[in-house]
Image (tube, rainbow, N blue to C red; front, top):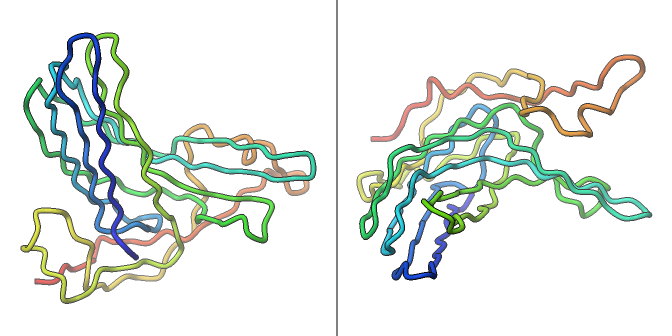
Length: 211
């Protein structure tokens, strides 16, 4: 699984010269429930506008396609808020550690009526009436853990690296954990009881990192 990264830049008007840029680097582009999304967020504020805080949220996007069209819903899965302002003409490095809760795996819509995607939304909230900087970085959620190569040396980079040596027990199976659930989960019933699918959740507490 390849790393995921994106850099977004915003220029402000009304006398706020300079640009604000946010660069997100993830060592992996795919994860499983129970795993933690480690990463690095670099905020370079070259503008005259203060960044109040940075918010990261993992979202689930579901698209249903039928003969009469399609419907898309977006649900927030989990979030991390990094308080502490980034003053004008200054920089800040943020370490991201976001656990992935119990959710359904990503699903392509090639031969299916349902398409399921995930993305990490990064928002730099700024002061005043100016619009925030935000963008969405796609990530995949699967059912089998993927690890980085053994010959990757963490000391070569300050960025968080994925685990390399593992001793994972078999996964447990748990119900999806979404904030408020989406309309499909709330409405769909199997017989008289609500449909409650269970998905594999991995325990990473015993994962050993390579030296």
